[in-house]
Amino acid sequence: MWRRVARVLNLLLRGKYINPNKPDNNGRTPLMWAAGNGHDGVVKLLLKRKDVSPDMLDDDGRTRFAWAVAGGHDRVVKLLSEQEDFSPDKSENYG
Image (cartoon, rainbow, N blue to C red; front, side, top):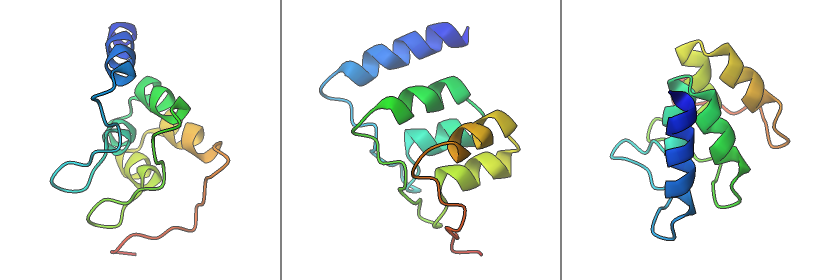
């Protein structure tokens, strides 16, 4: 099932009218939602894109990594921690 979702997401992201950095009303981006819900395939797709800003913070100052850790998603945590731009020292508004 996730292969189909990944294919559809990949097709949508190729469109010129899709902004993968557009946050919702809480400042959460698609990357944050994917990380927080353990969708490692979607996280991989988003991280491959040059127009995705992986260091954006939501309205509470949380990062994609904080969402993955809070959700207990080990595969996503590992995937994110292997990124070149990974910084474990970023703190959120709540410490």
